Image (tube, rainbow, N blue to C red; front, side, top):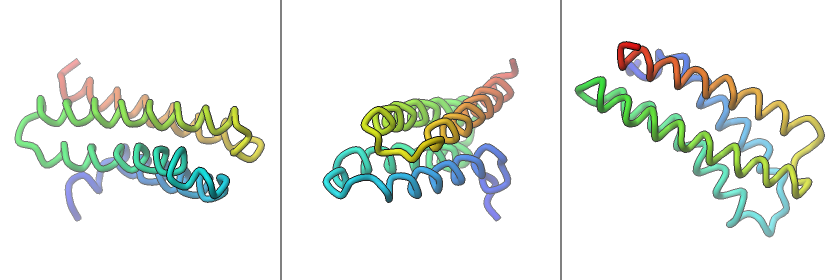
Length: 118
């Protein structure tokens, strides 16, 4: 098992990506190369940056990748908000995803602060 796989934040990020894949699979087919692709790519980027950062040699470098992961999370939330406004999401799914995103946001911030010694 790699070090990043032991991180709760990475596990939640992967679960979040799974959720995003599930809901975007129900988007209109003409969104396949638009919002579907964008939301999926940004969601996958969260766990990928956590993993990549964990392999870096310093906490400063790891924190940089955690910040990139946070930015990808914010991008995903924005995509999902647009999808919700376009009525692409089933009732209640937007709120469910937002809760997971909020939890993930707090976890990323907590790990960042811990690595910075705050």
